[in-house]
Amino acid sequence: MVTYAATLDVPRHIVMYLSRLLAAHRRGLNTPRGSRALGTFRQAVLVLRWFRERGCVHCLARDADVSQATGYRYLHEGIDVLADQAPDPHEVLDRCRAEEMSHVILDGMLVESDRLAGIRDNGNDVWFSQKHKIFGGNVQFLSGPDGTPLWVSDAEPGSTPDITAARLHVLPALYKAAADGLPTLADKGYIGAGIGIHVPVRRPKGKPERALDANTRTTNTMIRDLRALGERTAAELEERWRTLKHVTLSPGRIGDIARAALALNHQWK
Image (cartoon, rainbow, N blue to C red):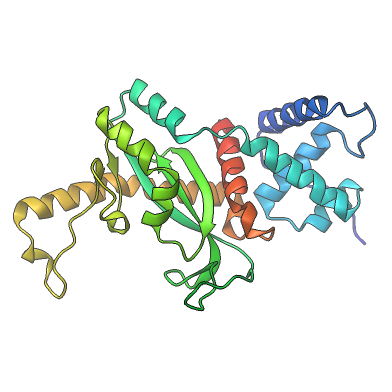
């Protein structure tokens, strides 16, 4: 076995932020001082390595000199305290209106995962996305006009369409925001979402784009151009917190992991 030194490419203040959250969590549990195998700083490093490096948990536990079971327990604890810091959609939209944003962008991303048993009524795997041809969870997110990640939802099985997931998690809040002057831009996957959710008009099947009138084509182009910045939200979260590229924990934890990644992203300076 070869021992070597490594550097965690995360700003130190993020490690300290998570360490403080873990310390507060331990105080809430009345954890006796010195009863844990790791202090909060080393636990924070273990959790952040998993988010940043997609490291296998048994390797992270070995490096921290704790058992694999303890490594998993510390990881789940870190995910939970971070996910609790993520804002709810009403809070986010109130802040957007206070900052006089022109609009928000709604989109979804599929967070890939290992296969999980679960069968739909039609016989298909519930966590399998026919659109992406992989297993995973559907996570909805909101971003600002500049593509800054603002909010992420809990995860629905990968077979869930974007509009169905949005109805479950965010559309009621977006309707209220639209009534207060904050519209939402989305792609064609959200056609039929309702008032205040602006999506491109679908061209007639089998017809060229020019089958739409000039005003409609112009509107479609404007919506596409403005919401294109929202595409960087998923890319930013997945590239910065690489564990979102493929979650090896239970797919039922994808929503908490995504919210935890968002909370960490808000601290990145």
